[in-house]
Image (cartoon, rainbow, N blue to C red; front, top):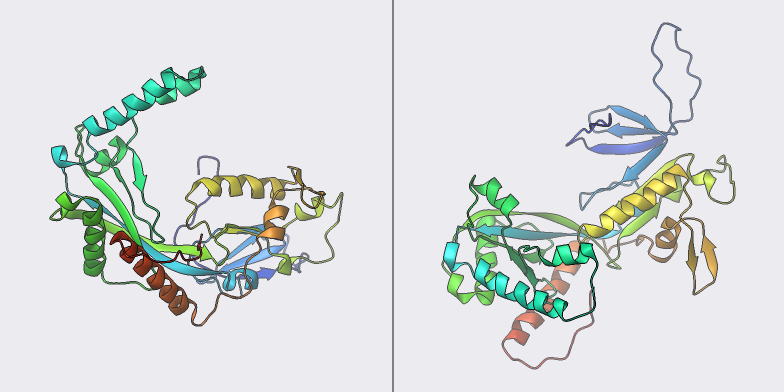
Length: 335
């Protein structure tokens, strides 16, 4: 916003229309807004005129009027997190434990090859460790870092909270049930915390593509033959509909990469890459994602949620039985 960008939160897009009328007869005294290739129409009837549209939605429903290519490309999965009450000295990841682990790492690094100044500086930091398991509906947790502690309570001491995330559901459930399931999962990791209270519980929907890969590319359904093709690349910088979604299971790191990839595409900046398998040179990296990891044309709708939920139930049962020593054959990896 400091650069002049306007952000309209909670504004829902209804449809994308091609703007073919560039010569409206308008009185000379009337302000004529700049024309773009597309009209992005909101549910309230407002219109945003632009040359480029980038669809970066999560698991919210995308209608065919926005993108037929994305409408059935992923399944929404609900996941949840909780912040425990202050544990103080009872925190299983308290400073003493963390310091001992970091000390071992520092000792090992000191005996290894030389490190750069930046690497040496990073080794002396003491971040709150991130922990997790290998379940399909994985559990992941960490101690609250200082920044989060300030948000919960304005002091500088170590509150020793645990941020705990888990669960994967295709339908929303009541918060009391979510809290009970999160507490059960936390107790499996730390039995001594069976009576801990949760001060905060929150969650939301994630977009899971069927191939478990981020969806990055261009919706060619909006392309036409009027765009000039200069070196096979510049025709894309004149305008178009792009997408970057489906990052569930990969975290936020690939989103920064996707932003850079699409920015280069929109600005017409070449970031050449070589497909070593087929010995084909792509002008821009988004074309690799577009070619090898395209959106699925069908996610199983209208039974996609029920199907994905049944599959998750089987895998969760496998994890539950495996933790209790039941010998089971391995299931195919979902991601």
